[in-house]
Length: 156
Image (cartoon, rainbow, N blue to C red; front, top):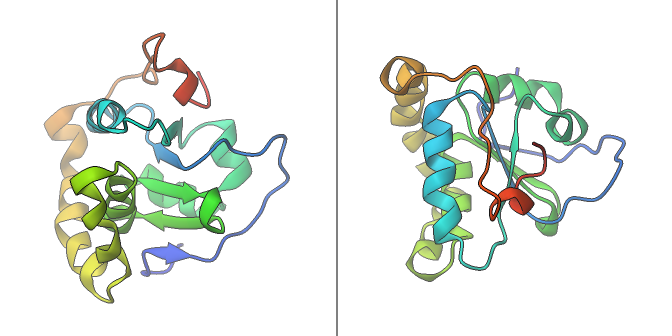
């Protein structure tokens, strides 16, 4: 099981190809996760964020098993290969993802580095994660991106 800390040291797995940039790993069947991608994609005007399902090959190659397990329990996972393979989960991941959007959102990213802030934010995060399927539902299939978004999804 992943430690309570919201970040962990990077662990490299054998790779087929380098990642094109920061990757947001989501539960591919979670409708709340699909909505999160629909929120993030248009606000990421520079197109730096990429998306991949936690159930996919990219996650299996890049993420340690304990991190994939945390993600399966409702945690978003954010990998930043351009920043020393920084790996964040839960609210720390959300703060870092929002920070990558630029403009006013970038003020949120440093909050993830302040001791205790992410842990405090993890309390409501975990509550939402426990109830996400009941509130938002699940889909048996992964999100199918629109043609203009397809390049930002690392797996179909």
